[in-house]
Length: 290
Image (cartoon, rainbow, N blue to C red; front, side):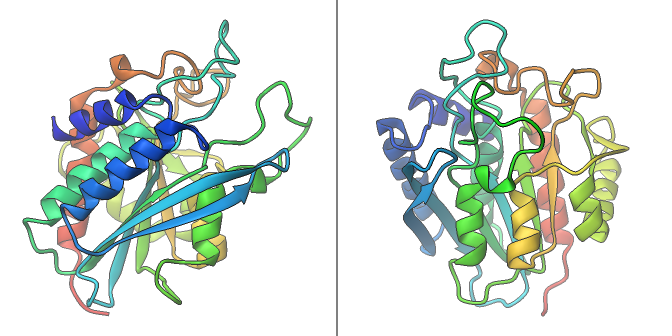
């Protein structure tokens, strides 16, 4: 319920598109909320260049728990909203709420932050909310063939090359992307299996032990260029992606992905609980030490 409320609050600001009032207001709220759980909050307030050469504001927000502990786990999600619902059949050029794509991962991480403020974990935790993940070219401007990775995940790329702590490397990382929809399914993704197979094994086994095997599937999908790709390749932290995929949809993503249907009506507290409880169990199972 708390994670759900955190998602609804984000949506209330309007689409969190870089360069808008909604971005500024939501960033201020996210920062204040995290500061209510820990005194160790850093905001990277920079500008990044999007696909068309335009510079847009980017606000990465990083909250740390137990900063004195060297063994660290990175939990992350993006909080921005794509400017267009270009996968929608009717309103391709309209903005959308981004309740699941952006909002859900952040909602789960805010609830984990709240719990970490009251329960001492044996490891250091860094919660990173990355900006300007979803500002790649719209469908009608995208080049044919494979798109360049630089066009997405711009906030994460900045952080990976300029981490909030010099020479930062986490023991491992977990990215949440679209983790709030009813009946979501999370297969094992290709880049995650390439860079961090033991983390995938740990998280999926934990989820199944907790009874969430209907969400965390022992099925494999190909590589997805998401924030974790750059955490792995640029920062060196082995990082996995928990992302909702639908093998029955034409593009492989959830059917509300980048459409007007990505609003609070798709969000389900059972899914949020499955993801959040799994992450908490993984965190508290991790032995302290370097």
